[in-house]
Length: 215
Image (cartoon, rainbow, N blue to C red; front, side, top):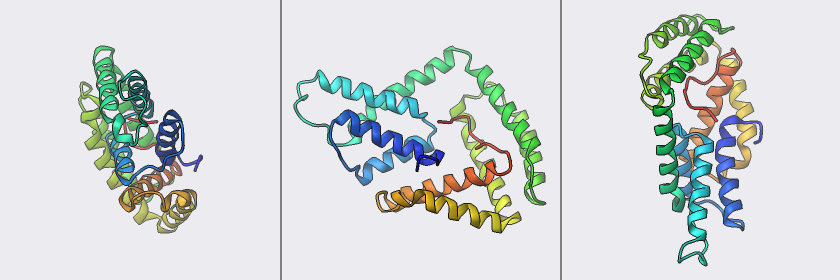
C-alpha cells in the first residue's frame, strides 16, 4: 500500500483520524465515500489533515469532550473551512501565476511524453496545445474538469494502443490494493483502482496525472 500514491491519500486520512481519536476504529462506508469526495474534488491531503486536526482540537474544548468522535463526518465541516481558507490564500497570494506555471508544465510534459502509440501521440499534442491556450486566470478548481476530461481520453487511447501494458498495470495495481478491497465500499475501491491504474499508465510514459492538485 505504501507505494501506491493514490492509496496513500486514503490511508493517510484513515491513519490520522484514528490516531487523533485515540483508539482503533473501522471507517464506515460513509467515511470512505467522504474521503473519496475529497480526493476527487482535489482537496490536498494536507488540507484534509488540517481540518481533521481542527475538528479534534475543537472537540477537546467542547462540552461533549468526554464522548468519543464516532465518525469521520464529524470533521467534515472543519475540512471544508480549511479548504476555504486555503482557496482564499491562493486567491490572495499569486494563485494565477502558480496556475499558469502548472498548466505550462503539464503541457510540456505532454509534448515530451515517450512511448505513446498512434492514438495517444496526436491526442497528447492536441492536449498540450489546449492547455497552453487555457486562461491563466483560471482557479485550480475551475481548470480541473477540462484536465480530467483530457486525462480520461488520453488514458483510453493508451489502453487501446498498448492493451498488454494496460493489463500489466492493472495486475500490479490489484496486487498493491488487495488489502483494501474488502475494507472499502465497492464504489470507492473501484474509483481508487481506476485512479491508480491511470497513474501507472501515465507514469510509464513520463507523464504526471493531469491535475493541478496533488498530494
